[in-house]
Image (cartoon, rainbow over all chains, first blue to last red; front, side, top):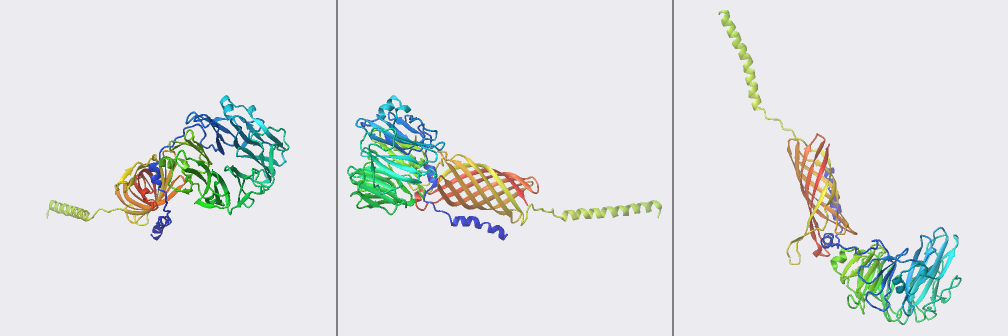
Amino acid sequence: MKKIFKILYIPLFLLMIASCSDVGIFYALEIEEVVKDKNNLNDNTIFTNMVDTDYDNVASAGYYIGNASKTIYYRKQTSDYSSWSELALPSGFDSDATNPSMVMIDNGSEYDLYISRISKDGGDVISGVYRLTDIQTKLDNGVSSSDWDTMYQKSFDDDEDYDHYTLYTANNLLYINVLSNDDSQDQEDVRQSSKLYVSTSSSPTINTPFTTIAQYSPITDPGFTTEKVLKIDYDGVNYWMIYNNTSNVGQIWSDTAVDFGAGANITTTGDTVADIYIYAANEVIVSLHDDGSDGYLSETTDAGINWSTIDSVDCIYRGFADINTLTANTVIVGTTAGEEVAEGYYQIYMPTPSIDEDDNFSDSSNYSSSYLSDASIIGFLMDENDGRLFCYTENEGVWLNIDENWSLE
Amino acid sequence: MTSNLKLFFTAFIFTLITIIPAYSQEQDEKDIKPLKVDYYSLGDQCFTINVGLFIPLFFLDLEDQDGNAAAAITNLTPGGIGSLMYEAYLNNNIKVGLEVGGMFAYSPNDNPFFMVPITARVGYEFHFGQFSMPIYLGAGVNIITYNDDNDVQMLFKPGISLFYNYSSSWSFGGNLVYWIAPEIIFDNPDQSRIGNFLDFTISAQYHF
């Protein structure tokens, strides 16, 4: 009989350690509504970035382009839910080819699209940078593989260290981070060297074959030897560059010179840097975190001389967009999982940055019913002319917000 | 005494000898009460496995915006449920036990919803020939999981069953159980709800 009653200790013990949750699960179910999948992208599609080709700021005139690494998708802006198509890419690559980065640069009359591309199938590596000029006109007329210009391309033998290119754009200039990877490791983060170049022209000419990178000035002292650049941007006065050193400590560079010369201001943070956002001239926000947790935002208004903390979160802030046309004076910032789970997005009220966690421009039931509320967000694309906000995530696909409601692309 | 008279007295005495004991036995039988046989006694135990249908009913908000109690649909689909139970008899009618189970259902966006109830139970069992009908009340904890959220709350489960005692070892039957599942959110009291659910299961019970 005693043994029988001892069994009753089990539920009592569980109740004692019961987690008094701060989230009402029954409440969440009660308000849940169907979140619709309104377009033809696979639910698991991961965009690393998106661009808007609309050059003249005319509503519904351009294309949205999303880089899904192995595939680049595009769709027209003529309707809210026009279908996505696959963009024809440079040929001559194996089936495992990926496009690590994509940027768009103004050529004076339209945008040119630049991508880096690499394949490593079968041991031999082909790696290069390619350009599609007048992207909007090309998409209107249909793109084929032969429309791509080879900026430069290099082949590496099976046992040779190979180059991996990452592209950035700031003030309409093209930056190329050339990472030499250790083939024996075959990992992008095990590098022999890292070199940074900046184009001397907004429309560099083609040089094939390449042994040196013409019309690109090497940045001779970027402050790193093997680290990968995270982002480069321009606030109208200063160029900004962020990366993490070999000890994973964030470095924030700012300089009026395009090549981050001797006069660069260098901020060595105590934590790891994740992202940077230029809100206005001399108003720069940086996202940092402590080894995957305790993320926070810092702001500087004097080119990095002084910094002040805006807000903090358990995970990591990443991805910014100005959504002033949706809700006044607001920048949206995403979160991504580190040691803690992601928390969707928050809104930063500008110009004196502050975050109220309850602020949400979208319908609360729709947002909580979508997977966005705990998605790891990579970034946003705001189409101000058409009132469309895209959100692309690591684990929950690509989302579109129209009239305060999110749907899956 | 003539031979006929002797014969008469002999027959009369023989008759008395046979009738009187029979009459006495009938009287004894009227004084003997029927013997009552208990099905179970202290120390008898049983294991039961239950499987069946889980039916979400409604969420009760004890105090909505107007201060009134309000019921709302759960938005859940009907689901499935299963459990294992151990019981021990205190006497022929009263038994106590422990039940561990699990259920699943789906939300409007096809997200799975799970609950794992762990309850202690006390019941009173009626016996009608080869049938048994226990009524019982279970109380314990309910582990709730939905997407990445988890919670542990109290749970109460009153119910009724009907079993056919197939043999001394096996019984088969069905159960109807009502779930009263409060979810109290101290940080956000507005989100507190009482979940009301129903499950209907069939059972196989082994006695030992």
